[in-house]
Each structure stands twice: as structure tokens, then as C-alpha cells.
Image (cartoon, rainbow, N blue to C red; front, side, top):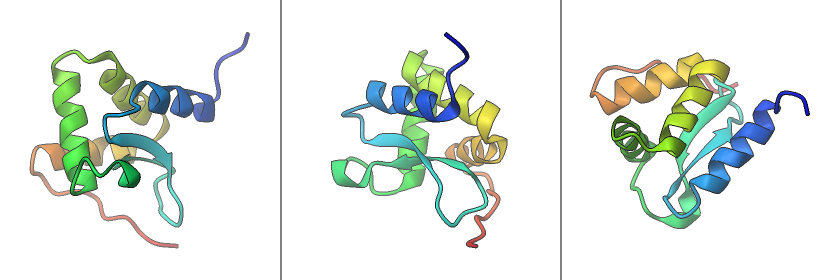
Length: 99
């Protein structure tokens, strides 16, 4: 077996995060290819930022799925990774640009 594709890794992360109310998704009409977002249909988080803060908190506590999600973003979309960390710390983020 070769190295898993980013799409396969994303699906694996989302399968593991099932029921937590967040997901890694492919961005549409955005400058960043991947995003950590609230899972709208789960209605767990009020905003993407709250979902991101939850994932960062879980990662700081050693949660393997949260760590995997952040590692995925660090490798495949460093801009989103930086935004997730900045948002979780209450720092300014890079605005998304609609195409």
C-alpha cells in the first residue's frame, strides 16, 4: 500500500470524529483547500470557531483524533492550521477570500 491521499486521510479523520460535531472539509470558493469546521447537521457548535477551539482543547489533552486533524491541517493547509490556532487563542486570523 502506498501513502494515503489527503482525501483518504480526511475521510478517516472525519470517521473518527463522528458524533463530536466537527469535521475537516474541502473548502469551496475559498483560498484555503481544507478547513476545520462545525458539522452543521450535528448542531453541536454555534460556530466554526467554537468547533476549532474544542478540537484544539482536545488536542492539548492528548486526543489522538484531534491531534491527527491538526497534523493534517499543518501538512496540507498550513494557512488553515495557523487560523485554527490563532482563533482558539483569540488572535487575529487571515480572512478567507471568496473566489
